Length: 166
Image (tube, rainbow, N blue to C red; front, top):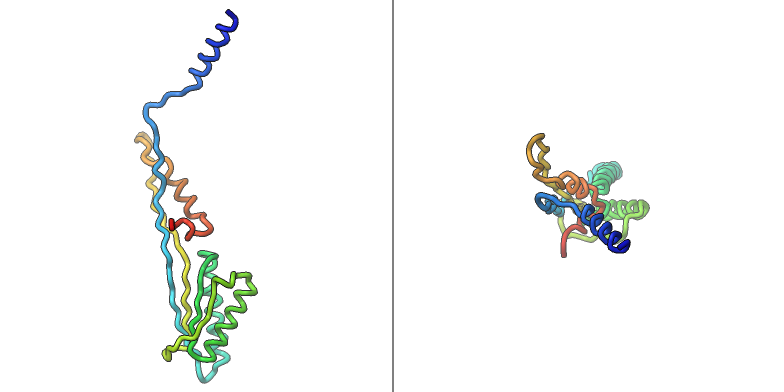
């Protein structure tokens, strides 16, 4: 009798723990677009003042690369030089990237037979574009419970290129 009473109590407690809902909620998740963004910069060294021109180009390149590092620390940069001045600037930039601890696979320099300019810099990084979540309206049924959380999660991804299925 005591055992029967215990089994009934266990069954009743399990029945009360099992909750019921009017409908099942299926999370759809937020949409995100991950795309590579490529920028090309062309530089020509001033022939009258080559040292001052090279210093100005180095300063501009430092700012450009710093902005790219803030957006995506896995950026790629290619230096295409056509003159010895362009080659010198490319080597200085690559040495600075090496000192900053940037992986050697992320930057490269090569000769390009373009007489238009001394140095062309191609910079590539990934961007994440997320959907805009609509605010909830009091008294209306909740449309998307997970939109805001999933969108913020996508914006905090350290390596956006890893979100792309290969």
